[in-house]
Amino acid sequence: MALRHIALFRWSEDVTPAQIARVEEALGRLPGLISELDGYSFGRDLGIGADTYDFAVVADVADEDAFAAYRDHPEHQAALGIIRPLLADRAAVQFSTS
Amino acid sequence: MALRHIALFRWSEDVTPAQIARVEEALGRLPGLISELDGYSFGRDLGIGADTYDFAVVADVADEDAFAAYRDHPEHQAALGIIRPLLADRAAVQFSTS
Image (cartoon, helix red, strand yellow):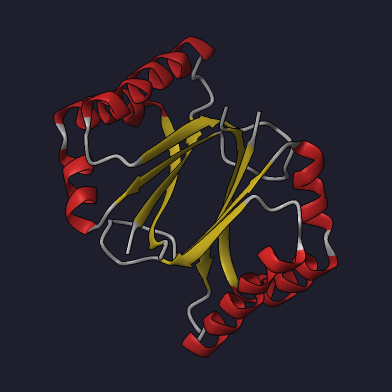
C-alpha cells in the first residue's frame, strides 16, 4: 500500500499574504529534507469552488512508519510552528492509495 | 498548470459501512467515465491521526475547464447524490500543482 496524507487549512481573518508566503517557503523545503516524502504538493485555494478552505497540503509516503517519520521530523514540526498560529480551522485525512 | 481538487467528508453518525461501500463503488466508476480525470484517488481515513475527517477524494485535472467538466458530469453528480445525504461536514480546496 501507499499512504496519502491530506491537510486543509482555513486561515484566521487577520492572516496576511506575507505570512502565507512564509508557510509556502517552509513547506517547499520539506521534500529536500525528508526522504520519506515520495510526493508533496501544496497551495492556496484557487477561489473557483463554493465554501472552500484556504490552503491544502498533500503528502505521499510509503506506509504508516514513513508517515510518522514525516509527521515527527523536526523540519515538519518547525513548519507546523509557523502554520498553527495562523489557523482558524484544519481538516485532515490519511488514506490508503493502493 | 495542473489543478488538484480535494474534498474531505465527515459522515453523519448513523452512516453504515454498506453506505460507504456504495460511495466507493460510485466514485470508483468515475475515472473510466470522465476523460478529464488525469488522476483519481479516494478512501476511508485510516484512523492513525488526531481529529481527522472520515473520507477523502483527490481529483487531478488539467485546468479549470477540466475541473468544471468533472464537477458537472452527470455521473459525478449522481455520486454526489449518494454522498450528500450522508454528510455531517465537508471541506474542500482546489489548488494549482505546477
